[in-house]
Structures are given as structure tokens and as C-alpha cells.
Amino acid sequence: MSLARDGIPAAPGIVIAPARVLRWEVPRVPHGATVPPEQVEAEVARFLEACEWAKERIRVLQARTVRTMGEVEAQIFEPQVLMLEDADLIQGTIGYIRDNHLTAERAFEWRVLEWESVLSHTSHPMVLDRLNDLADVQTRVLRRLMDLPDPDVTQRTDDKTVILVARELTPSITVQLDPEYVVGIATDLGTRTSHSAILARSLDIPCVVSLGDVSELVRDGQELILDGRTGRVVVEPSDEEKQTYRQRDFAIREWEQELVLLAHLPSRTRDGVEVALRANIDLPGEATNARAHGANGVGLYRTEFLVVGRGTAPGEEEQYRAYRQVAEAFPGQPVVIRTFDLGGDKFPAFLHMAPEENPFLGWRAIRVCLDEPQMFRTQLRALLRSMAHGDVRVMLPLINEIAEVEATRRLLDECAAELKAEGHALPGGWKLGAMVETPGAALSAPELARHVDFFSIGTNDLVQYTLAVDRGNSRLARLYKPFHPAVVRLLDQVARAGREAGIEVAVCGEMAANPLAAFLMIGMRVGSLSVGSASLAEIKKVIRSVTYEQAAEAVREALKAPTADDVVRALTARLGAVLDLSKFAGPWTASPEH
Image (cartoon, rainbow, N blue to C red):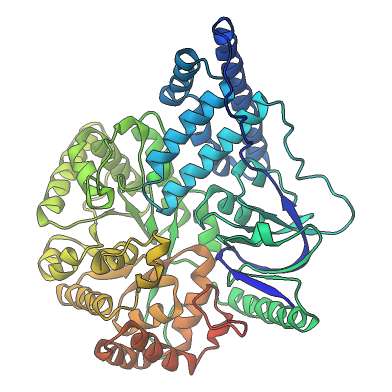
């Protein structure tokens, strides 16, 4: 009898193959490991040599990644190099060796445990990603100290392809995978945003993470079905199940071919209402891919890649080049660039941010930028300069106060005056928008709208702040409800406020990639939806399959619904009447197996 596990879909694709279980874990350090006083300095030297060796190995993998995937993907290894240069980690370990006469292995294990303790106070995905990087560094250093070989994930035992099963994959292992051999990845832990998941998508390997105990359940050679669209893994499937998934794979491939044809068709409802469809991107190199998938510009260009994991703040020229690259990829189309959304789960080393009790309610986003004017001015100058190369618009995260917008406008004016005096060509004006991410901003949207040129609703934070539910806390996952009536009403209120003020309202959170939510927002007359490149075609399919009147009627029904389930039922009934929802990616959808 088959066994199924549901996890988080991290890279799309359906594959059927035998499992290869990989044990790449932190090695167990023998207890009671101490050395005589006269050997302490030799132990320190041994530890430092292991760190240098690990750093060199990471640099080799990084160079290989540059060759095989590109420079941007290779930056994934920078946080690991920084960890191996971190004085707190290195000197702390040396202190344990000298003060307690511990072996290098034991001292390093102690210091890493202390780091993990600090990072483990939250279950947010980005913090978990840092833990994953730390585990990669720890494993590599300990294996060197303990003279253990690295596993060879490239070695093939026969001509068969395999699905790799592991407790968790690290970036240094993932980057070595051969897609011709490893056709799928299934892990107990991990997040969709982890560096390993990003690399799996770059390698085009279907991947499901956060499967619980799958690595304990599965043995080498057992046959698996892995569905990277829904996040399901089936162990030892029956012939009937394999046939069902093969048919599903065939249907999905036909669906994807149909979607490809939509890429360059207008993003317009059947009754002629235009809904701009833009891309969310994290790195400048993603702009070309987004355009190829039919994006009408960029609705959210996150800029944190410039600062996270860095020991020094990025300069104006570096930022200017990164912004200009995307602007030039979309000539004549909007490119909305979000200023640094730091704090919360993003801790650039150069800011020396003190620990906070509630970091997501603390010093973050626009608050950090306005309190760090030199850093903010550098970014604003780079943004202003990039406007000479396209329709670049500036978006401010976590706006709650009109004063925050006014303060930014004053800085923009000052920076523009400086740049003009230096001889730079600048446009006559610029567009400044606010991300609506809190109930406070949503409820004061009519007043806020008079001070900005556009709204963009950040649904991820808006949902978690409205419902007081941490979206990264798996224990509370059942309470994180994007279709909660309170959220639906706030979305409608912001959309109305924007229309009445004559400014564009966009949605750039994860909800925009959900077909039900996209349908809802069309009915609210949201002017632009911004989603990841992989979702562009599916959301365009929604837009082109419905009429505005159908969507508006669904909104009227949703606004009367007393519960989130009622909202979902209303939207599913109306959208399901014109589209086969089981073909859409994501675990929410009602696939035949769920």
C-alpha cells in the first residue's frame, strides 16, 4: 500500500523514479573531548586550518556556480564565507578551546549551538535559511576536523535516474547535482525561499520541501512519485497511482504549452478591462526571464540582495547599475523598485542591529531607512539616476504615517538637487508610492492616497498583521487565512480609496499569484497584479478567461461572506465555472489526489 506525504512545493514538475537517500548531516562529536594544556595551541591551529579549508572549498563551489549558473546564483555562498570570517564565531570557538581545553570539534559545536539558539527564536523562513547556511558551514568544518569524506552526490550506481531524499539539502550539495541523474528532490525540512530551493529551480529539478519525516520513511531504491506543483510525494505508488500521475503530467504539460502562447497576448478581461500584469523579482538577472514570460514591467523589485549578508553598505554606483539593468530590460514600462526592507528577518551586518523582542513590529523597513539617512540617501541617489533609463518608480515599505512619505520626498528633492548640480540628467518628476501592509495604512488609505502616486498592497504582511498571525509559524498555519473577511474588506477599502484619489492600486504579495485572489482583485478593479515569473502565465489565463462583471459579482458575494471558507467557496464556485482550477500550481488547489 502506498504512503503519501504533503510538503511545500519548491520547484515544479512531476517525476517518478527510485529514491536515493542521502545522509549529509552534521557529524556527531564524541563527548568529553578535551586536550592536555600543552596541546591547546595546536588545537587552535587545527581549527583555523579547517576554517580556511572550508572557505576555500566554498570558493571553489562558488566559482563553479558562476560558470554553470551565473554570478547572481553564486552570491548564495557569500553568507557562508562571511560566517567563516565572523569574529564572534571564530574567536568564540578559540576562546572555548583555550579556556576549557576542548577539542576543536567540541568547541566549534558549542559555539554553533549558541548561534542556533539565538536564531531559533523565530520560525520565519529567512531565519531558517540562515540556519541552513550555518549547518552547511558546521558540517564542512567538522568533517574536515574529523577527517570524514564529503558524500559524492554525482556518483551513479547504474543508468537509472533517482529522486534524492534527505533530511535537508545544503547549497553546497545542491549545486553539485546533475539534473540528468537527480530528477527530483524531497526533503524533511527546508523552505521555498531557501538557497537550496532557489538552486533546484535554477537547475530545473522538481523539488518538495518540509515533508516531515520522509527521509526516515524511505529506503534506497523504493519507487516515488514527486509532484513539485502540489507538494506531494507518494512512496511505493500503485500502478493506478502511477498512471494517474502520468496522465496528470501529460495534462499539465499541455496546459503549460497553452500558457506559453499567452505570454505576449494582452492582459485584458473578456469584456475589455485592462489589468497590468507585472513581475516580482529579487535579482536584476531575473528581469529578462520575467519579460520573456510576458510581464508588463516590474511591480516589485526587492533590493535587499544588495545588503543582506554584506559586511559593508553597497555604494551608489553598484546600486545604480543594478537598478539601471532592470529599467533597460523594460523600456517604456513601469519598474517599481522597493527601497530597502531591512529589519525583521533581514539583518545586514554593517547596521549592527540589536536584538528586539518583536522584530517584525520593530525597527524595520522605512523606519530603518529614515533613521539611517546616509544609507537611504545613497539608495535614493542611485534610484534617481536610474530614472534616466526607464520608467523607474520608488516604493516605500511598511508605510503607516504621512510624515514618512513627506520625509522621503524631502530627501528625494535634496538628492535630486545634488545630482543636478553634479551634471546628472534627471526626469522632471518622479512617482513615489506606498506599500499598504498594515491595517493602519489600509484604514487611513483615503488620507494617505493624497500624498502618494500609487499604492501597492503587500498582502503577506497585511494578512499577518490584520490577523495577528506569524505567517512563518507552522503551528499557526491554520490561522493564516488570506481570505479572512477582515482581509477582504481591507483590500476592498484600499482599492476604493485609490480609485477615488485617481491613483493606481497594485497588489504585489503572494495573494496576487493565487487564481482565486486574482479573480477577487479583478472584481475590485485593482489596476495591476504583480507575481513571480512562474505565475505570470497562469494569472494571465485567469484575467483573459473572466469578465469584469463576473469578478465584480464575486466580490459583492465575498464581502457578505461571514467566514474565510465562505469567501473561498464563493470564489471557487464562480471561477471554477470557467476554469479547471486543478491545473493551477500550489498546494491550495483541489487536485484529484487531495
